[in-house]
Image 1 (tube, one colour):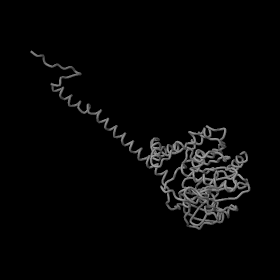
Image 2 (cartoon, rainbow, N blue to C red; image 1 turned 90 degrees about the horizontal axis):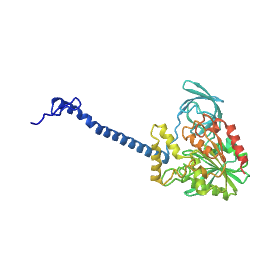
Image 3 (tube, rainbow, N blue to C red; image 1 turned 180 degrees about the vertical axis):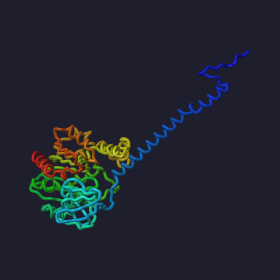
Length: 399
């Protein structure tokens, strides 16, 4: 006689009604690990896809040249001989700054009076006076973009020259001087030669000839066949052509000035061509590490930092540009020329942490000016006197 199957409270017989009920109830539980694995895999796929899409998007943002028309988002409500009332985004841009409108340029003082949505600021024709009810935008360049207007307000004998480069003839703003040391300014991504106009008058007092250069894809310069920025990788060859031009005109050595992405251009020039004939470098809010910039932007947009790594890989795949090789923080040991470094602590575009690390790595060569609460490429605007004094002291100390 075969014994009947027995059951215990923990293991009831599957042949019993209770066992059948518990077996049925246990079925979803047994499937749960599989469902959890599928759900987890789905999340991973979504994260990977989002990261990849974000990386490709960032690569596009970095590489593609923006040719969209200028937008004027500030409305002029009232104008007197010495003041102006404005409303709109960036009307309260801090510091000494410019006001640009179609066909004109003025300068706004740093003092700001707020009343609801309106901003009242001191106004100086520079050289123009805006009309009431017009549209404008602020411009941290603080000097007019048009060369004739710059010449008028600065009272400098500035002129436009061209020099031959890899893609053709490149325009540059030239300011003469009697010294054999030249200063060459390199503007940032999407900016113009006028970005340098704030510093040119101070350097002019030292007697140095100056060039504020253009590079490929500027509106008035040769266009890259790919229609994309090189992020300093290719633009450094345009700078090399400007250095050669200066030497052909009698330059004994040069000081290179890089604003924002212009810092990457200067850094890659030094990497490729070396520092022979370079007396010093001035950086303002420089891109020293594209990896840091991409990670910073990923954080600003609540995306994983790896999205920046993906963007770097996409850039290399699409263009051959090795952003890591251009990293001046990682390769700070390469530096062999004195550097004056300006970077505001509140820069929302290029992380000040890169400059902090760069200055910490090379205190023997880097003089660091870190204005508190100042934004991107606006250290001059916040305190022109201090900025110009630091520049003059640095230039005086160069051998």
